[in-house]
Length: 169
Image (spheres, helix red, strand yellow):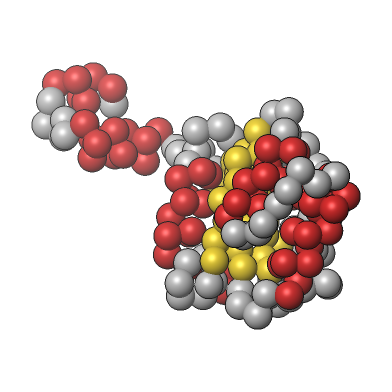
């Protein structure tokens, strides 16, 4: 959240192995920052392979744009125009990215040099995606060590005093 609140950081990557909590963390960031630091947050699941048409339609829906059956170029221009004309701050979360792509050419999202009030958070398993997409800050989630994993298990399973937990240690 601190990286996204930094006025000089508009592109943040959240990288970690599958199951480390990237999506959950991105959702929490969305909940905490929408309405306070960002006027609007758009959460998009990119996945593999990316369905750019579907993602574009979701951006249009979340931006409340009126769209007819436009050609892709017109749709992308409409998204770009809407975002760059916004006077409030916008956060776009691209969850579960498996490949890098040009945000403007594929989704109509302006670059940080084109619109300082639009920030992007990427979640991915691959650090190269964060680097190649131009993330100014990359946060790497590490897997838990055995002790922390066991403590987390205990906290969620309420088995702090059981024989099973002693056997696991």
